[in-house]
Image (cartoon, rainbow, N blue to C red):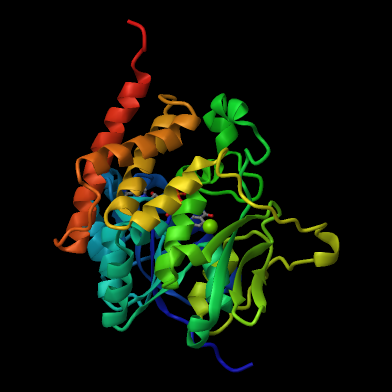
Length: 401
Ligand code: NAD
Ligand code: MG
């Protein structure tokens, strides 16, 4: 085997999250030699400090500025540089890493991800929200800077691996698989009573809270349809979703000649991370192997858009274009937080998003704008959060005084 040409200088944005921790663990497991330029986290200073002492990054950044003194205290005497605040996260993202794992959750990931792309790094993209809110800009920015965006989301990593850009015009359909989440077989009535704890218990993947709830509503698959449309420049009508509860076939590409290519693997995010890290090489690491003879039958089914309206809402937002995807994303972040905080019910998540889009549409706030796309995404996100907050408050208000 010839030497691999792996990135050496890397940054991990969102290092304390599910994907961030898996990324650092993969570096350990694969015994790769990396120099960490930046590690960044939202609030969890204790875990960030622990990671920093182990990995000795050039800088450790905490987005929550109020937590910076504590980070300094924990790293006192270590000689490690620290910083705090959202601007410092974006600045660290633009430092001289060749490869940047973008694993911050939510819209907060957009500015740092763009900063990394602008700096010409290879961006391993887990933060799907940045693509939903400013997909074309992010991809163009990376291309102009001589970098690249490589998907980490397992479905998009799967498609990326079996999609040959030279054959793009011969792609008939992209088929995204979905586990269906913890409520796959539940009735609407049962879902109406679902608790955050039940919704967080994903059958196949262990993930951060926001994406776990998005998986339960299937908004996650909706976000992924939009993500696929941008990443692979595919029209919405050629992107389909199939329920595949075993999460072994991670997605498929159907070509015009009737041939369909799929990518398979055990459900472990370290595999798509390894792919994004070594591409176009392959990273050897002690991954669990797929044992098809013992994995049991693989099943596929059509999604039920009546029980899971979030998927329908996302497809409509993609078809509507303009500011609709970013508005949907912002509203969803507010609705998920409200559900996790016990302020609204599970079914209210999708209805909050839908009502927010309807109100913004009535105020002509979803049309494409001539302003800078990132500025517009910022305005849309802030407006969607405000309107969704009002919708949530309305749901909480007692109907009978
Ligand atoms: P998580 O909640 O476990 O981790 C999020 C990370 O972002 C943490 O390090 C947190 O400290 C940081 N963070 C949170 N708010 C921040 C802010 N305002 N500013 C800066 N940093 C902030 O989430 P996760 O499950 O690791 O997911 C991360 C991203 O990857 C999400 O966009 C998610 O959709 C995507 N993704 C995750 C998985 C998975 O298996 N977990 C799979 C596919 C895609
Ligand atoms: Mg996914």
